[in-house]
Length: 491
Ligand code: SF4
Image (cartoon, rainbow, N blue to C red):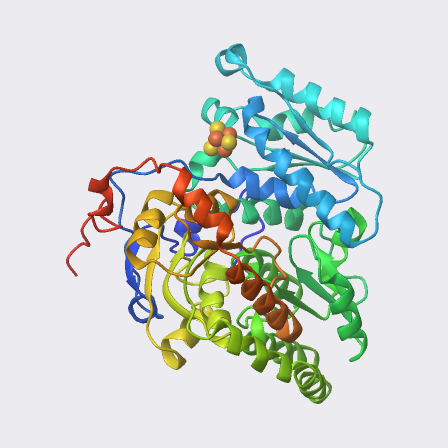
């Protein structure tokens, strides 16, 4: 389904990508049942814990645009994530040697009377205040369950302020209740940027490459790598300016660190402006980086230069990889991450000699916006041994059950709310917070040493497990981890 930038909001992932949040099976089974022409039904839960919300994902991207501001039209609690977004913003500033500053965000702080009589006046005040405080190059108005349920006319308010606020004011439809897949918030942010910020190309560039990522900690390395083949990365969306975003349609290609993140923007830029989107597996580890760089080489017509680069980069770390693999041989692991990473990290851990016992994913897109099954799913199904696989929107009670049963040496998570529970069960836990962890050849080796260090000292998790009482009864640990999933509909 082509991306439609003529409509006001991006359709949710459940409709666009047949995304699911309930499944229990294996990677091979998942690949076969979501192959082109097939569609897997979601298995509903009769019990679920709290989860995340798409407004957090939208605001993570938008609050990182260095000269823009975000007005969250919501009760104050919806902006609780801003603490995390601010820490992430500082992390990106650290990697750029920039002085620290805070994200430019405002909450309209909707209260009870606004939900009865409407929040239009509050929203006007919020937009005016954002302009007064930050003088931004664009203001993004993110919506919430409260503003969505009462039907506040966000676009109408923005239109009323047209002559008063001399900067683009852009609605971002990311109400949490719209979708169970929080990554829908990425699409809401990209839709807003695509429809209101990005301009048609004036002059196509042969050297600029969009890198769709989060904080961009590998920025210096990628800049150096690309310079060796005559290319220049532009890191989007966080840490770009509004001016840079206006021109991403001029790039020679787009790459992403994560297919879940990049699908909407990468595909839309390809469909609308002819910017080739590299649809390879993510650049984690050796195989991932090979595919990513080769995809780039094909997209920009530099296959030969890229092959030479790959040989050189691999040679530099070959011996180190063998050494770290020896250290990790025999270790076992469980993975719990978003789909872009959980499947890719099966391969990463295999490359390090770690046996993956189980992988859980917080949702799964049965196909990306460009129409194909995620390349990593296809590859794991055809070139790797089968691995048990489950899907749930970070339902920690399911993960705790799995860990109790499987007793892995290691738990890898990309979400701290999940990793803490594994540590409390006495399992060495590696949070993969930085999207460039295990990035490419050197990144894989560095990651391997980090794991070896963590395994060398289990005292912390052992002490924790002895002192912490888990909130689960023995009954729960005797059940199947996916006990609360509905039965599959008969075919
Ligand atoms: S938008 Fe809805 S789901 Fe998201 S934080 Fe606010 S109330 Fe919660």
